[in-house]
Length: 244
Image 1: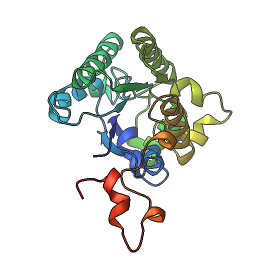
Image 2: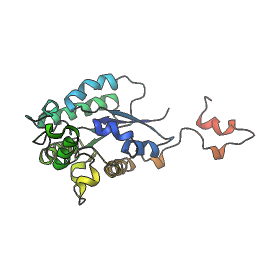
Image 3: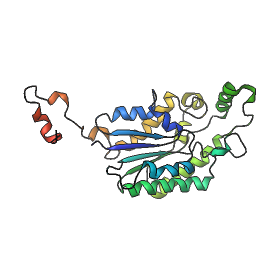
Image 4: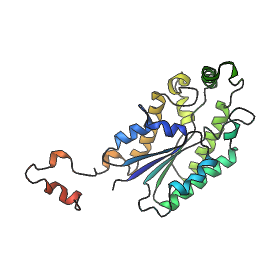
């Protein structure tokens, strides 16, 4: 059975298998090497995601994942007193919720690679324009998220990774290194454009390539067609697929 790499997160993960998505790019890179499982849930924060852990990732699963990306925070950082306050999770709770997720995955498999990804930056003007396009004059008058607050959640995510000796991708900082990041990387002030997805893919694959999860170094699940003898095809399968 192929190794499994799980992408666990909110809508930015859920949408990652769309055309140009970072999850789809990972699936392409790991074709015949590993299965990329999308476990993204739009609108979820870390508090709600904790309820999914035992449902999705059983402690006695026969084949636990070899790697997990944890990509939450965009909804946790929603502001109190604004239109998305239902999703708000206090900063310290957010950090502890991430810690609980990590602990769960480590119980599933002590060797699992856990990669934390921070929430992206927020383009407040882009969020307002998007809301106006949907709701017109009934749209929010005050931002439901701010870039400053998103940065505070990103900082907690990175600090936790450093504390636990885990890799992380500081997407909040990385995207803002590029001039015009607001329109280049974000489609509605929060979710990702194809260029934004490319940044996530590049940063994730960079981490994987520094470990045993480099796709180039992983064996394929079945023999390549070029080594199959037309007259005696069974020879190619005897070592790699002995049960066939």
